[in-house]
Amino acid sequence: MGKVKTMAEETAEKTEPTKEKKDENTVFVGKKGVMGYVLAVVTQFNNGVETVMVKARGKLISRAVDVAEIVRNRFLPEVKVSDITIKTEELTSEDGSMSKVSAIEITLAK
Amino acid sequence: MGKVKTMAEETAEKTEPTKEKKDENTVFVGKKGVMGYVLAVVTQFNNGVETVMVKARGKLISRAVDVAEIVRNRFLPEVKVSDITIKTEELTSEDGSMSKVSAIEITLAK
Image (spheres, each protein chain N blue to C red):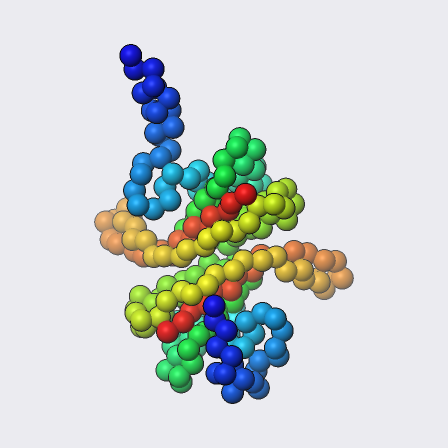
C-alpha cells in the first residue's frame, strides 16, 4: 500500500517545503577545495535538476562565488545566476556567546 | 533597475558611462577594516545619493557582503539590496601571466 509514499518520501528529504525555495538542491560551500563543490553542482545539474543553490557563510562566501563562476564559465555555460541573496545569520559559538556572520545564497538555474 | 539617469548625469564627474551602472557611487572594498567601508557607504547615502555600489574581488568578496549587511542592519535599515551581480575578471599579475578572479557588485538603494 505504501508504494506511492515511498516515492514521495524519497524526494521528501530534500523538499522541506518552507516558503523559501528549499525544494531546490543545495550545495554548502565549506573549507575543502573549490573543485569539489563545482563537481557537486555540475553533478546535480547532470542528474536533471533545474536549479542548484550554492550557500556559504563568512569568509567562505568568496569561495561560493568562485564555485558559481567556475560552473558557468568552464562547465555549464547555459547555466545562469537566477538569484543572489545575502543575509546575516546568528551563530552560537562554543562558549555560548552569539556572533553574527554574513551568508550568501546563489541560485543557479538551467 | 538602478538607472537613475538624471541623478547620474548630475554626478557625471565620476560616471564614465559604460552600459553598466557606472553612474552610481561606488565603494571598492579592499584590505582595510570593514568599518571604514561601512562609513564610506553611510556617508554617501547621507550626502543624498540614492544608490551605492559596493564592489570587491577575490577573497575580499566576503568583506563586501559584511559591509552591505552592517550598513543595513546597524546604520541604515531603510537601505535595501537592489541588485547583486557576480562575474569573473581577468587580472594581469606582475610576471605578465593572466589570472581570473571572481568579483561581486552589491547595489544598495534607499
